[in-house]
Amino acid sequence: MIATWRLPTLHELGCALLFNALALLASWGLYTWLALANLSLVFLSAVLACAVLASRFAALISALLGFLTFNFFFTVPTFSLIVAEREQLLTLCFFLLIALVVGNVASESRRRLSALSAARLAEEQERLRSALLASVSHDLRTPLSSIIGAASSLRALDAQLSDSDRRALLDSVLGESERLDRYIQNLLDMTRLGHGELKIERDWISLDDLIATVRRRLAGALQGLTLELRFAPGNLPLLYVHPALIEQALVNVLENAARFSPPGGVIEILAFTDDAATSLTIAMTDQGPGIEPERREKVFDMFYTGGDRSPHGSGLGLAICKGMVGAHGGQVRAEANPEGQGTRIVITLPLYSPTREARDE
Image (cartoon, rainbow, N blue to C red):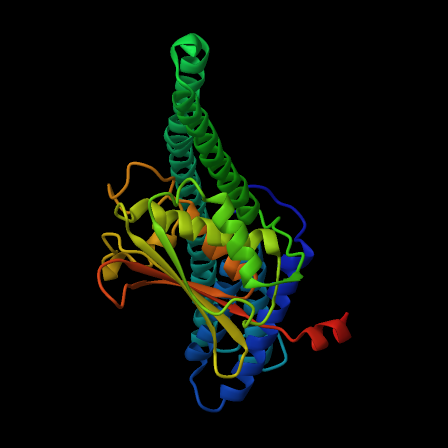
């Protein structure tokens, strides 16, 4: 039922006119093939389309237009609103009744479906908000607790500490501060990705420079591990990317590999181009516990930490890596270590010709 009477909007009126015109054309083509009662189903479809795509009011307008159009063009005498046969009058009346009921039911179903989708979206947003708060409460408090503890020890026990003890505490403060900075950066990056505010400001940079910067940033996390580069420095083509974003993507993957690597483990970085030199592949392999095949896609979801495989990690690192690589037109996937236990994260980035890019600019 219509709660209040009002003028139809242009969208509602347009939908009603359009779908009834289409119904008229279809019925005109089927006039010699179908009985009159069956032709009414064509106009009923127009009412249903208006209810689903516009509103209940549009369905009402469509039902009234369909009633008049059906009467004027297809009942005897044609091109008149007079109905000479009782059976055709009953057909018209039943059509109008059914059209009003169908339009009302379809519109109400559309409204309830929209409300259900909105409720599910709100539920998903609340789930992500709860996960984010849990991440902040754990992953940010852990390094903060270490920093506070080390700083308190330096202040309270300064006279009793040896130089090596002071260096160890300062190294702890520095390492935990860097870890805290990476967590905050990941949270900020995920917020920018979620709101579509991540701007790609491309520049030419070599993979060698990116890897060197990543190694410096992760010097503490890589202690006790061996990093092997399986590519010839200087022999790979330049990347036309946003350097800071791809650097952060590599940091997230390498830090993840370091977190799951056993003491004294080896992390391998392999890089190569395809035969046509249209893409560059970077594969980082660790010797950790590995990822089950059914979970290799889930590790790129937000807040997915792979169960209890690690006491640290917000579940944002690989999700951000996927978003940043995808923003450059690239892809990222997880594979098993082809040489034994562990995981290989494979990043593929498109290559561009410096000559062509300079010409386009």
